[in-house]
Every structure is written in structure tokens, then in C-alpha cells.
Image (cartoon, rainbow, N blue to C red; front, side, top):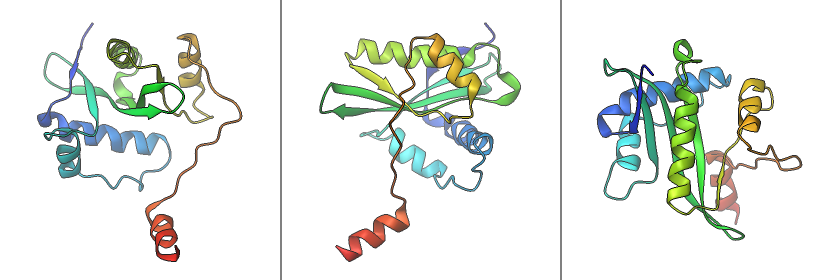
Length: 160
């Protein structure tokens, strides 16, 4: 294996943000990334982190992939993990880093006693869907992702 999986550290933030931006390009939403390095440092590496990361690092120190996740609470199940992003830079796909990062998150959730790990996948990302299904994950039919963006949130609050 030409990489290791380890906990993300504050000095990895620039690489993590680069992978987030590369993922946005892949998902055809390149202008949607608003988060900054300072946001990631504050929210992930402070005394009260909002998320955790694992990174895939080559022997030369290059970060080639990352998984960003956080704990949630299910009223039906209790503690669960939400895998926000799993990304391997395009030139390094196929070397096993994605599976290793995915495995690290699932092992972490298991050790923490979480009842479920959940995430979203775009319906056109056939290779990801096939991979997830091959590991025993279920793609749920009938559920839709619901979001309220910052503008809509502000308008709703001001009206109510």
C-alpha cells in the first residue's frame, strides 16, 4: 500500500479544503464551496470539534484522500455517524485509498457503539453506488434529501 490512513490534523486543512473543492467540481457544483481554511480549523480542530477527519497520506506527505464525518443522533437508533464526504484525488483513484478511508470510518463508528452510518450519493455516481452496495450498504428508495439554504433560512425566520 502506497499510503497510510491517519487522523486528520490541523496542518492538513489546506489539503482537505483542496479535496473538498475537487469533490465539488466532480459533483458539478464548483461554485458552492463557501467554507474556508479558517472555518475548517475552527470547526474541526478546536477544543469542541464539530467533525472528525481521516486522511490518506503517501510516504512523501501528500494527502491523496479524506473522509469527513460527524456524530448525529437518531430518535429511532441513538448515536449514528454521518459521512459527509469521502474523496480521493482523481489521479489516485483505484489504489485502494477510498476503500481504506471508508473502512476507517466504519470501524470508528463500530468501536464508538454507533448504530448506523449514513451518507448521500448522487444517483448518477454508478461506481460509488456499486461499491457501497458491494459492502452491504443499502441505497434507500423513497427518501429525498431536504435542505434549506442560507437565503431561504433567513427569509423563513424573518417571516416567522
